[in-house]
Amino acid sequence: MERDVAVVLSGGAVNGLLMELGFLKRLRETELWPRIGWIYGTSSGAVCGVMAALDRLDDLEEFMLRLQPEDTFQPHSLWRLPLLGSHEYRLPATVGERLGDLTEMARELAESPVEVVVFATDVSQDVHGSGPRAYELAYSSRSTPPETMAQAVMASSAVSALVLPRQVDDRIATDGAWVRNFPLGHAYRQPGVELIVSFRYLPHYPRLSAEWLARVRKRLERFPKISPIRALIAELREAEQRDARGEPAHWGDMIVRLMRVTVQQNTLLEERVARDKDEGLAALEALREDVDRIVRREGGRRGERVAQAVAERFASAKFPFLGDRLIPRIAVQGTAGEITLETGLRHPQPWPEAEKHELIARGYALLDEVLADRAVA
Image (cartoon, rainbow, N blue to C red; front, side, top):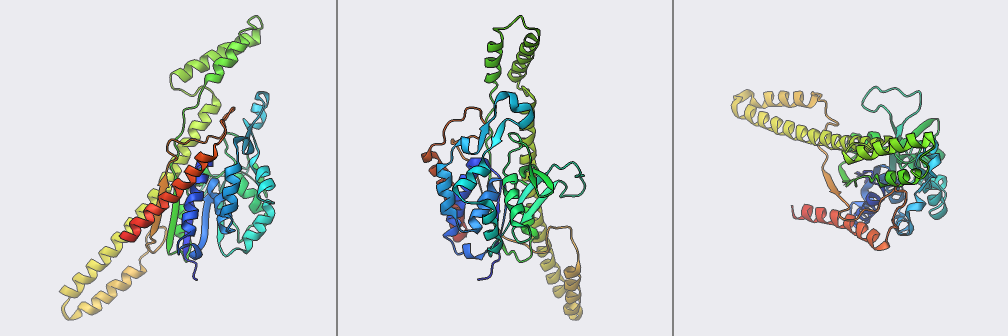
């Protein structure tokens, strides 16, 4: 069967990954599954994309049902925060222990009929911003060495607000959500794609708590006679006041807020460009048909010849769209609702299996609804 379908998966942390898993399980039940030739994914979408291309969604589900917060990002001791980030990145080791060696999986991926492309953000010292893809790293399973591909998938999932960037070949890379959280444009540019099936996770960001500042301050107030501690107590009080006013309490809070803005804006821009391209091509086609009809009706004996000349001129015109053809898209998007399986907290609650099943079922149902509406249409 000809492979002419591209799948696009956004980032979304653990909630998004579980919903994307359900989305892919439903997609696997359709006639579109054997037609998939490309999967584009960032962060959680990169992990799901690899497992989908290897046809190991059942293994991924078993892995996710067992996964707990400490298996992904494990909090560092407070004194290590300025040097190593707030958390240790445990996910690569957990994947290796429970799913298999990442490099071996990348070797299998290179032989798969489905090409997987994952995205990371380049934060190397020598990178300079210029052009629409500045700071963007894209790694294809067809052209990237397996060792590098394995590193790229884990770098794409390394949340910058928690952990330091990672080495990927000769680049220093981190969470791909900064530059390409929803890599829709790459699917539009891929020759041979006749249909795009996409999932975009819509995050609900909880308010970061600053209660720990008050706890630390109260502990330090037992030593009021030590000058450096008095100064630190004053700083903590100011941070608590900033939090009460709705301002960032500390630099970490500020970075998280800025990351949310960046991820949301580049995601919306990706969809806006695709929508504008679709609308532009549809309007252009309608214009071409109207002009052709008018010329044939009003052109008299020369109508046929003039219509042919006009058609050739339309065909040779170059427009700044992402492509020269209208590509239909089955688009799914959704939130985790009331369920929030958070990562990155210092004392996270366990992730209940029942809630994981619910998120998987939600991703499955979202695509099922869209497919049902499409069939009716």
